[in-house]
Amino acid sequence: MRPAFFRGRCLGARVALLRDEQGIALVMAIGIMLVLTIALTTVAYLTTSGTQDAQRTNAGQQATALAEAGINNALAVLKVSYPQNTYPGPAGWLGCGSLLPSTVTTLPGGTVTWSGCLVQAPTGSGWHFQWNLTATGDAKNPSGPAASDVKRTLTAVVPVVIPTFDNRGSGNSAINYLYAATGITLRNQFTVEAPVYTPGTLSLSQQAQIAETIPPSTTSSGGLNTVAAATIALANQAQIGHVNSNKDPAGDLATIYTNNCNGHAGVCNPNNPYNDPAWALTQTTFPPSTSSPDYVNPPTLTCCAPVPYNAPVDGTSHPAPAGQTSYMGFWYQAADLGPYSGCNPATSSVTGTATLPVFDTNGVMDQSAYSTGSPFVLTPSGGTYKCISYGGTGELAWDGTTLTIKGVVFIDGSATISGTGSYVGTGDIILTGTFSMGIFDTMCVQGALSGGSCNLSYPWNPANTSLGIIAVGDDGSGDSVFIKKSNFQGLLMAALNLTCDPATGTQTQGPLISVYGSLSCGQKSTLAFPAIPFPSSGFSGSTGPLPQAQLLPPLQYGGG
Image (cartoon, rainbow, N blue to C red; front, side):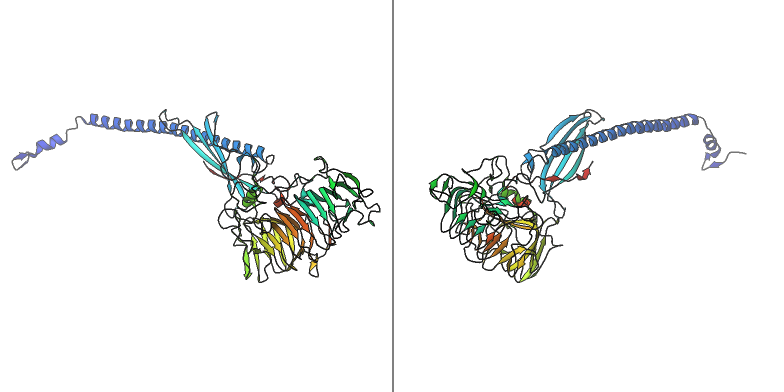
């Protein structure tokens, strides 16, 4: 066949060239080598990356282990500090103090930086305070000297709760006494069947009497009474002892401590030459020895740190001693219901003209919530209210007839009880202002209310039911607490004067304490109350150490 031509060209020659396979092996070899090179490079890269990734994973695990060690270090410090140290420990108050400062610890494999801050717990958490712990582990990066270290951060929360009762140091506290710093005045046929203690003058007149015995109660078998006063003044048929001679034929108290009796130096002498109407098995000088069970540790109401406090307290400032937290500042922040722990809307309610309590308005203890002239009415006549804290540890409620108290309530202002009612529960109300009750106002332990007054023979057990009032303000006449022709069963403590109006019908049952002022009562009745084996926590810090905090198990671990 002859070659074909197209447009003058021979097609057979081109076909021959196309069928020539010389050099194909080289091309294939190059292609195969390229594929093998890529595969080998990929394998080498993956192998190297896997090794480095494994090393980084190990470094990450090491950093996490270091962070866990830092959290454990912080927990160990807290465990040692609680409850041995008075709350909140060396850290001071809320914030990042000195207990868990930022600390770097070197451990095998790297370092860890750990710290902790004491803060207010988030709303609805169920506890009041918490330690927020943070730890960052730092391990060397295996990628090379120029690579950044591998870091892992862990966090944990340690809840902190305040106990309801705290009995440390309460044995010699004023909680079971009629106590006043500057003096006690009793008159108007007022009979006291309880121990009395004042570094000032005990003045009795108008047939006022201090009985030689303390009657038995739900918490005590009773026994002989004691009186301790730097000076004793008796007039107008007033006497100490020989009151309940039917109970004790001898009619003598256990002990009278005094340095001046009825104007003469020395102890009382019911016989010649002084004929003092004061009888006791033992009479000796004031004060009792600090090791004596009759010695009373003076209560305190420190006020000024860490929160500014402008209300007057006996005309002077009472800052917390060095290294100690102030009583008022502590409860301003730690109360079960107060400026830092309000009413939970989900469990609180109000009806009629009643209102929920306002605990503070401006972050400063200055009686901003309720003035002395317009106090919060704990028992309003026109409605009801119920205030329960988010964690459920605090409650203040009024249903029209019964007041419910649970835990410590802090109100930056004054309060009053109006009308007649009873109460249930155990708790204390702390006021930067004053507390008052007016004519015919009555508040009794539930079960003791009878005919508009309190039945003093009712078997009251303060360990189960007690309402304590602590007021530090001044009503303009020097009184922090003023009771006028009214009835009250519970604990009353005033920073300044505590006055029970001498009008007939005034009746109290429970300890009466004036921390820096005087106590004056003229109620025509008998005062006797059950022994209080330990104070509820609102009194802790005033009649003994502040309550010791309790740590709950750590939770809410996070990070990595």
